Image (cartoon, rainbow, N blue to C red; front, side, top):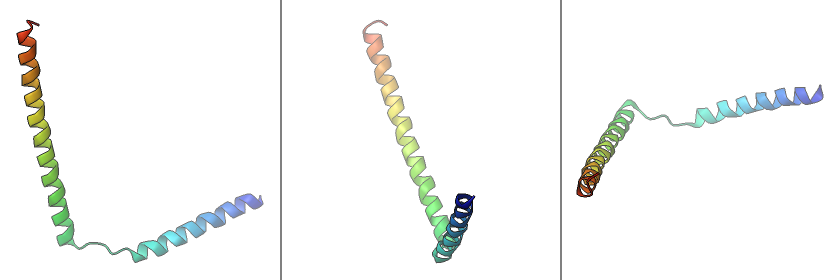
Length: 71
């Protein structure tokens, strides 16, 4: 019984501490969020294009190697 009460007190303390820490967070403004979102989308697009090109080159190379050996 005492252990259950202790767990509830610990849980309550955890929520109070979490609320206190969230008050300290400096949230970004809309302009910063939009800029960061654009950066993430652009980087994702570039990485996707690189993977797509690399995949095409490897597919062509494998097809060429297989055609040389008559497979």
